[in-house]
Amino acid sequence: MENPLDVQSILNALTDTSAKRRERTIQALTPDEVRDPRIQDRLQRIVSADPVEYARNAARAALIANGITPMPSATEIQLREEGAQKPALFAFGLVGLVIACLILACIAIAVVAIVSSGSWSF
Image 1: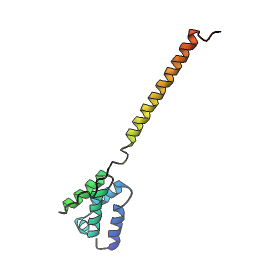
Image 2: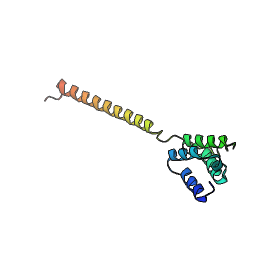
Image 3: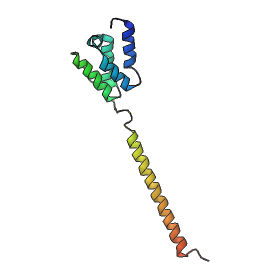
Image 4: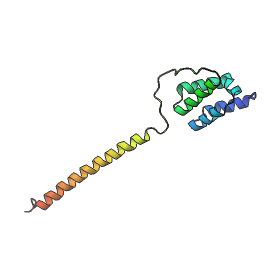
């Protein structure tokens, strides 16, 4: 871990846009790497502000396993898992589709009733 290029590649991986890559990098860290102040600082940032819970948990576990107390979250931010909103959007879309179908069915029934009653005959 003495090589500064290795530390830089770890720091880059810890800021990757993929939460899975951040988590895998954290889990692969050696105790010597975790004790590096730059990596330790990045892990503390992940613990306090990463948007993905499993990445925060991995960073917290790495720090604790190496005898380092994780910092509490610096700010209260709303954190959610990747893709957590997709089921809600699907449910709202499905409800909207059912309501639209019911409205169309009511209109169709009303038209059939009017036409079949002969009230339109001259």
